[in-house]
Image 1 (cartoon, one colour):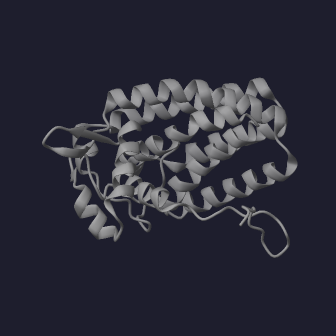
Image 2 (tube, helix red, strand yellow):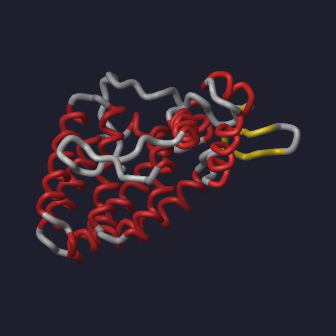
Image 3 (cartoon, one colour):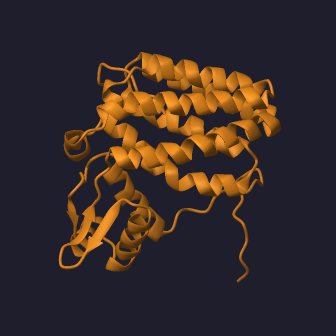
Length: 246
């Protein structure tokens, strides 16, 4: 049997379904991000395998990957513990993000195609509606999607690869802090960045991206404290509040 790329009804290639290992990894990662497994939680390989109805092998592989990405800490005789995400972690994340997102915005302004710009514009509209309606979980997710789209528009596969691990850490950070933030400034910043990318203004796009990250750093830092890191409740999709910026 030969390997062939699966096609849809119109003959276009479609993505293959994720492997079991990838599914287990994503499930555990999202549980940590959403606070189902708060910082300090001990994850037992056997218990998770039983719960997910899989063998221990994909669970072990997922835990190893999560440890390499900073979500778990494996300690002798204690097993795998969900790591804390504190102010110092946020500083490191923003230092890297400011530089890489500035570059991504500049390259996006240089390479963006009309079709992809249309997708970005529709994403912005959905994010604003979600923020104005108080749908916090949806707004945070759409904000992350906006940044991913900017990186993809850069046309630089190495940059896309470098930014991918930061996305999950960023979403974890904003799950801990977005409940008290205002979504209106975030929407405005994203819309101005979109306009610069659309207009092909590389310098302005980079400057806006850097300024947006710096503003978000300043607004997030006071909200990130030990009690929030350890005990923040899961986001309510219908909470009567607006989303934080990303």
